[in-house]
Image 1 (cartoon, helix red, strand yellow):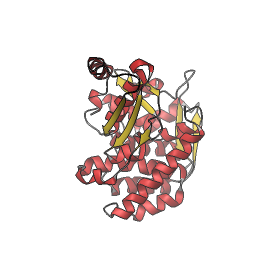
Image 2 (cartoon, helix red, strand yellow; image 1 turned 120 degrees about the vertical axis):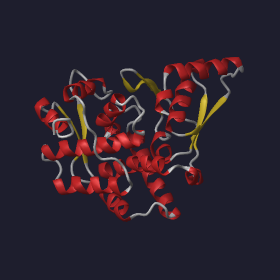
Image 3 (cartoon, one colour; image 1 turned 180 degrees about the horizontal axis):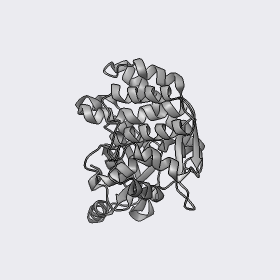
Image 4 (cartoon, helix red, strand yellow; image 1 turned 30 degrees about the vertical axis):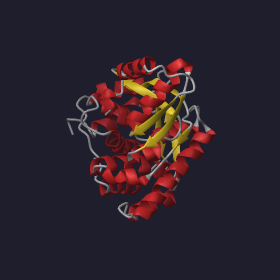
Length: 287
């Protein structure tokens, strides 16, 4: 899991590559979930200044999100994915048959990234998800196809996250802090993103970007797939300070990816600290 996504693990993998004398024509295969994909890609980018790798994602989250786009990296004590590289795989092979053995909680965590895409980019897709039953195989295949299609469209426009690709971090600015605060042991990544989506929506409502009824629809869709939608922030000030370690922050300013209703998005920065903390306080211990 996330606790093993470290430089130490990557170094141990690199040791094995040297021991087995891999060369620049060698190919690494990332068979597994998002953590395996992130570490394999990062290792491939480092070994002899870059060898090829192939993604074969086996979790819903990695099939619809983590395996597509070329982001690789590891976590450290300061935050999530703060050490890494943009490094594209030679190919991505997605087979929904892998999901038949996935525990329900892992499956639900992947749905959070699907909902993220719908809220940011496609109102009709969101409405489809509200009535979709993902236990139906044709429906699941269509959901995977549409989610990958949406992400690929964004990545093709902005591979290195200089602009619109940052929108894919909706829910992650809050979610990464939750993961860091809980040492990556309490929540799966998708679960933390789900809570982060609810927090981001609360901020969007306060800014007048989103109607409360739309925010409630998103919360109810997350709950439909048994995702968590609440978190008790132990220290609001400490939580706020963690935002400045986010990769999207610059010049002491935090960028928030927020919905402008369902199906649209905007990037907001220079939001008043008092307003942000008022949202965090709604999730804090004194509520």
